[in-house]
Length: 208
Image (cartoon, rainbow, N blue to C red):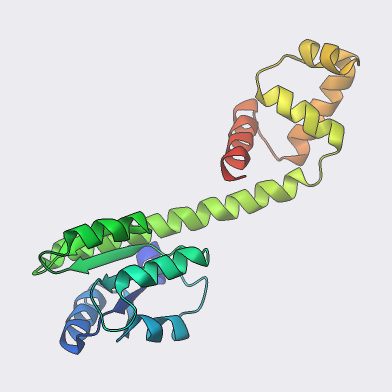
């Protein structure tokens, strides 16, 4: 657990049991990952800063707002931070519900240290991938904003697999004109190949 994505991340431990918080903090810090711990969901919500890289390690049953309610609260506010749920025996149905609210793994007590660290690793890697995808989507949208309406039309048809001649016939212009539009689309989108342009189109369609 030593690559750069993990050392840049913070694990946010939310558990009302102080001994458990201290134990988790020691364990996670022992592999070089920063930890912030909170005694309640409300405490976490007050102190958490949006955009921090990392993941939650979350007890399901806590006084006040439960772990499940915290995840639902975050989801309602479009805050997506992956969570590893720690559950006691008999809490599995609740943990499954939590996973439907955005948790990506759950560990039953008493847990194996390595199993928990593996789950945390997966959560942090997942969060970094989601962050990277979001950043890429923002960049693609920025490039799309520079296309003219006609260039949008040409890009849509090019990425659907239509030939220059087919596009020219559809739009009632010459194939040479379409070639020029297509070249400008590739330049503005910073696409090195048709395959890359198609991938960008699919990425934006998947996030609309």
